[in-house]
Every structure is written in structure tokens, then in C-alpha cells.
Length: 225
Image (tube, rainbow, N blue to C red):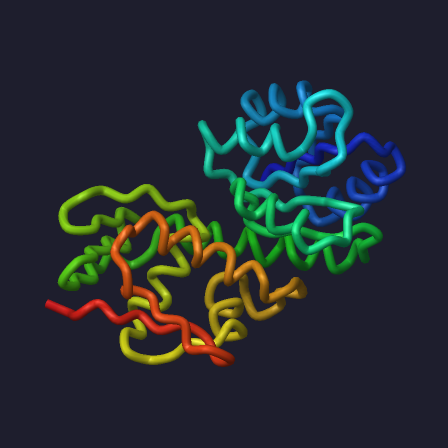
């Protein structure tokens, strides 16, 4: 049974989300402020966190920053904000996805199911090592190194890098990357691809490994060994 932690200060939202998740067989724990949410995350060890940005006391962005120092749990931000910059801040801090309020409960459940399927599929992948001039990717151990230097990637970042590396030399569109990493029933915005690949580029630290093909998508250009 997958465990989901819902952190939101609106009782109506918590009640609604819980009413849709429990019949799906999920174990659901809730928290209504940032401090209790962080404690719950540490004790409950959820498979997925639904995190409201606007929380009393410790807000969702700070909570996420603290959580990312100790966990790579899949986090979906819940936010009433519509500005693109606010969404990007959450993704930059380490969120895997976001949902803007008001949202469709059925869409949210579909997003959660897709995320959990991806997480489950990533837990026991077929082991393969992708070796390039600069980058080495062990798909079984889910480790990455650049010029023999270990690189720490989040689960989403690893899956994006693996997807484009397995298709070296080919351009993958944002739609293709969304389908490969987030799942074919993903309902969110393509902006998540740009932000997470930006993180990957920064962490790899070698210019030119991931090329942007303007208006189309991305291409992995490291040379195979």
C-alpha cells in the first residue's frame, strides 16, 4: 500500500483529497502546518507528498527545501498562485510537479497514480551502464558520474537524463520526455521539463552535453565509448 502525506491548512481541501485517495487504497496521513508536516514526513516516510505552498509558520517552499536535504520523496506542490515564477521557484527548490488550485480531484488522483507507477518502475529497473566520454550512467544502481566525479540527481532528474542519453543524437520533444518520465496520462505543463533539465545541466557541469533545439526539444550529445 502506497503512503501519501497531505500537507495543507485548508480543512476542506484535506477532506476532499482524502475522500478521493482512500477509496483508491492509499494510506493517507495529513498535516495542517509546516512544522507538523515536516515531522510527519520524517516519521511516516511517505511514497508521495502533496504540499501546499501557503502554510502558516513554516511555508511550503521552506519545508520543501528542508525536506530535500534528507529525502528525494516525490513532491507535488499545491498552489493557488498563478504566476509562472512562483511555480518555477518550487521546481527549482526540488518539487517534482505542481498542481494549481482549484484543481480537479480526479486529475490529481491520475497524476498521483502516474507518479507512483513511475516510482515503482524505477525501483527495480533492468541494470545497464550507459558509458560516454564524460558521463557514466548506471541504470540499475541509479548513479551518475561525470569524468569519474559522482553527481547527485533527484529521481526525476535521473530519469530525464537517462531518457535523453538512451536516445543520444536524437531530438526528444518536451511531450516525449513528459511521456517517458511523468507518464502518458500526465496532465500538467511542459515547463517542468525545462526546469528539471536545467538542474541536470547545472549538476553535470560540462557545457554542451545537453543541447536545446529551439522550438523542438533536447538532444544528448556526449560521445559514446
